[in-house]
Length: 231
Image 1 (cartoon, rainbow, N blue to C red):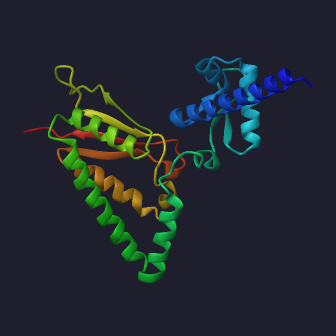
Image 2: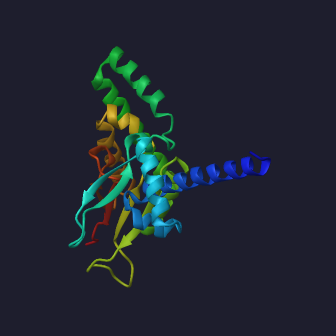
Image 3: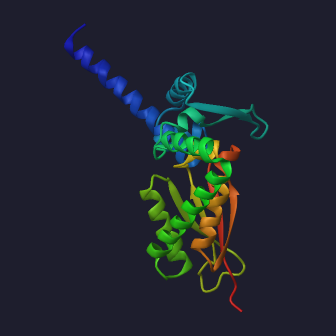
């Protein structure tokens, strides 16, 4: 084998790894996708995409379910497995879980719940100080920026409703494609309730409802933020 052939082989391997990482990133952000959707998005042939998907499945980084589309054969819809999600940053979740386990063993689970509640209260105060006093839309956008800086793949968008006035929405979706505290949430599910309370405290002029939850097996965490009507 010549040096050129060796270099070519290394280049091909690097390209394959890059493509697989692109697939994982796409699934992390979008939640799920079919092979054809991935091929179109990444500008790769469907045959190549299926080879990469097969490899990722063998590595237990993705999983799929079969869905019926029209009258044709069922199609595979792919999503990240728990192992696949663990490849992304999680804010040192394992250390946090170990610390909370130690506190639970020493002081009891009630004290752990109290500590988590206090932590979210402090976080809500920090967010309130940094979000400013602008419109609800401005504050939602600012919160998403803060969450992204903390390791969340966060997005937001306005919802068109019958009550929208002058083109301004009073409803917004806050979406997080990953959970920076997923390890903590698995071991201490109450943390999710505290997080919802935190968002409600951050937007006192709105109601906040959880619409999706990663901990419940869905592909993202979603929050519906609705401005309260002024009377």
